[in-house]
Amino acid sequence: MSSSTRSRSASPTSRALSLPEARRIALAAQGLDRARPAGRVDRRHLRAAVDTMGVIQIDSVNVLVRSQELPVFSRLGAHRRDLIPSATAQGELFEYWAHEAAHVPTADHRLWRWKMERSQHGPWQSARSLLKRRPTFVDEVLERVSRDGAITSSDLQERRGPKGSWWDWDDGKVALEHLFMCGRLTATRRARDFARVYDLPERVIPVEHLRTRTPSIVDAQRELVDKAARALGVGTVYDIADYFRLDTKDVKPRLAELVESERVVPVSVEGWRDTAYLHVDARRPRRVDARALVSMFDPVVWNRKRAERLFDFHYRIEIYTPAPKRRFGYYVLPFVLGDTLVGRVDLKADRAAGSLLVHGAFGEPGVDKAEVVAGLSAELTDMAEWLELDDVVVGRRGDLAAALRRSIGPRR
Image (cartoon, rainbow, N blue to C red; front, side, top):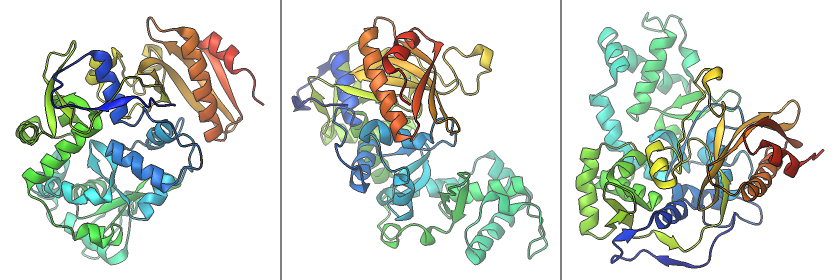
């Protein structure tokens, strides 16, 4: 991935954007206009990438690699596979429901306390049912963690507790998740199976972050809206609300305040029905030369409606679709080349055979297939090397497959 050096800052007087301009702004806001580091990638690079994205969504599916590693690879290229776990262990990241389950900068813990507080008073249905059926159970679980240390949900399988309660797995999991949502517990991930390990926040999160002043709900939400708008570059109120899964009724007044303070500027985008908002920090490169496979949970594509508006790219996760009904495959990653999405590939890491399997390779309508194949071949080769796989094996599905197979050739 290379970047253009020719760019200009967003101007408050800019009121209309072409669709190509909006695409370039969006990719630049996600750091995909920048060249990947030439040398060793370390914690400093991760900090910069997390600051750019604001959040890294977590997913447990490991067909290729854990999904949370892919946004880092997309922006930084090959890196140590323990980069995120080590940052978490050192207290720089923590897990919370920001968008979905996600890695969040620990410095932002203060911005999520309103949601933690709200979760205590408005638990979801399963937690509400548990609290009604077993009113002391959640406190008993918290007491056990406080007394005995970190646990996983499997540690709460049926056994008699100190007060004669039966520790049931289902109820135990609900209790732990409720405590996690409320911020009374936090969680890390166990390396061997990716299970959540729940513990008291003060034993996981650095004390300086726990002791920071708690902002008002309005101030916290305004800062989250600002962060979301900056991470998107340009987006509608619905795009901005979706980024951290905020309610639009909370976002609209905060966005109005950011307009008033000139942190965002209302603009029109070619082909968009709704007003968009351009962040004051948005870069407006005249050219973007990105080359990146992006996770299905990458901020570039996780909002499917936005991806269609911005890139004319229709994308759906087919993991849970029965195999005969899948259009593209099981674990399909979009491919960014230049300033748009040009194709997608169905990938799997065959670790036993040492191969990166490309079950299918598909180009978008109207793309230059030779150009896409050249870029995709290079990206897949880089990915295989990062994952320490010996070769890339291309199957026969998709209009790019034959040319991609010839381009990559044997590597062993």
